Image (cartoon, rainbow over all chains, first blue to last red; front, side):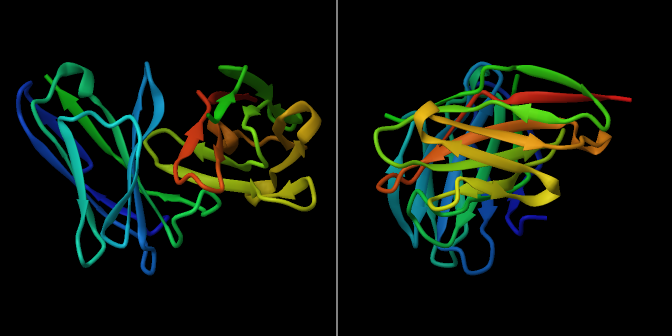
Length: 114
Length: 113
């Protein structure tokens, strides 16, 4: 158990819908990262927040957005869902924001878009 | 830009045999290198990391990895594989001024008895 929690574990929804994925970082970690894992793209970095502020952006679609709240939990919002958005979405957290920081991963949310 | 190549998609080894998983990276400066393991239905667990210093690093579960700058490699090794090591292994690179991890495509390890 990494100490990072993600809810829900599974999510099944239809195309065009909007969903919210939630992540609670390890106690004391200020940085939260979101990754998408799919069969064709592998593990791709989406976005990072540090202490409530967006710190880095990766291959995140405009239909996707995220935020980190004062209690440091984070939410990833996916809208106008397409079949290709079906994937495993991971949240990770670290104490620092640098590239050397060890990232601890949650168990993931499996999103299925039908 | 950083990139990571794991040339082997699948590897099968016998239980008790030694293991080496290959990882090559591309990065202009000194990289931060990581190996993660993902068991089916689970998140990623950090096995070990290299930042600087001794090029042979020890990790959890009996794994070790060796950083070779001249070959841009960071191969993962284990002297004797156990059936519970069957999983997918990911090599990743981080950058000092970057924040994200860039992952390789992963290597699926199968262990036969």
